[in-house]
Picture 1 (cartoon, rainbow, N blue to C red):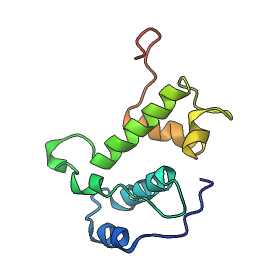
Picture 2 (cartoon, one colour):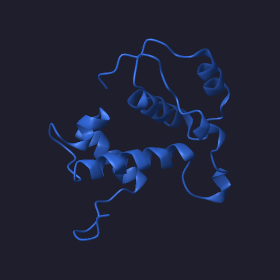
Picture 3 (cartoon, rainbow, N blue to C red):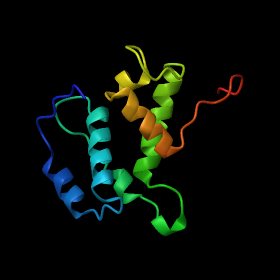
Length: 119
C-alpha cells in the first residue's frame, strides 16, 4: 500500500490479540489493512474504538469494521466521482488494486448510484 509502518503500539497489539475476531483471519487482515490506510505516519493508528463498539453479530448486519470500511470506500468513490481504476481512481487513493476494490465493493454491497441520485 506504499506505506511504511515501523511501529505498532503495545496497547494496540494487546487489544488485537485479545479480540475474538468473529470473521477469523480475514477480519483481522481487513482491520490491519484499513489501519495502514488511515495511518498518517510510521506508527500504526488502529481504530480500536470500532472493536469495542462492534454490534452483536446475532443482531444482524455487518461488523463495525465492515461498516467503517464501507463508509471509507464510498467516501473515496464519491470524491473521485465513482472512478475506480486509473491514476486518479479510488483504488489508487485507497492503496489497492482495482480488482481488489471491485471485489470488496461487491462483498460490502457498494453499488454506484444511478445518475441524478448522487448526494
